[in-house]
Image (tube, rainbow, N blue to C red; front, side, top):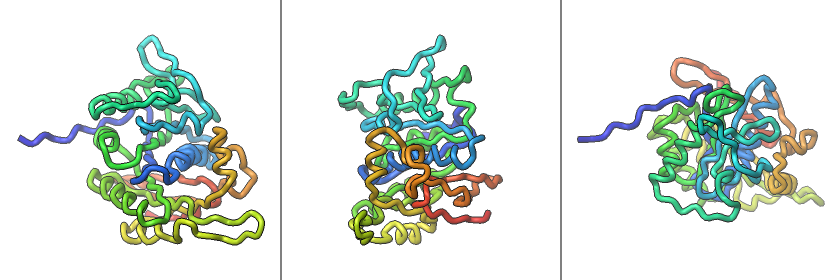
Length: 291
């Protein structure tokens, strides 16, 4: 007798969930989740009335603590719920808060899924049960299409997914797999971010496409989704990420950190037309999709 899929249960207090994903590791997903981290900051910068949280679901290689310059263990409430750590006004929860910096995590599938369930639902913020109230919860997904991805997409309703890839073929192959997985579990792909799209010499301004040009655009055409933008290989993005200072916060007046409130992306699902702002910086040349 075939087993049915688990029934999706919303996260209490969270209006919309956006996942930032990649098929392959090392393509800049977490820096996009610091592009999820920069994405979260972009959402709040574009509309300060919006509340945003970050969940680092990369159990085996959590990056959000470093990118958000956060250390320590979450406090536990009387109800044995975790309080997220906060920096730059954004609450965060991560497996990296629960283990030593260099401790390897070598869990099997059931342990990983149990940990994800706790990160999603055993959280309390500002005396509100669970995550809420949040307008957006941005989830930094691990690379690939394994247990964590299936556990999250099958158990909570997701407004949409942002896929991050570099332009070279080897990364695009796995990005395609990621997009196909979201299609199978009925998660709309909001679009693709092409990271490390170009290097511009700081002395002569000559541009070199180290990893190829427009590979993500070709994939987007194949999938029928939008290219949300291009992010160059830029020294300050790397330096600020390593210091735990998201570029949107550390360099708001520089081109790599400037928020353009006119850059918007529309996405429709179910019967509602929901405005999802996915604004990171002027390197992201977002286009509008009217519903």
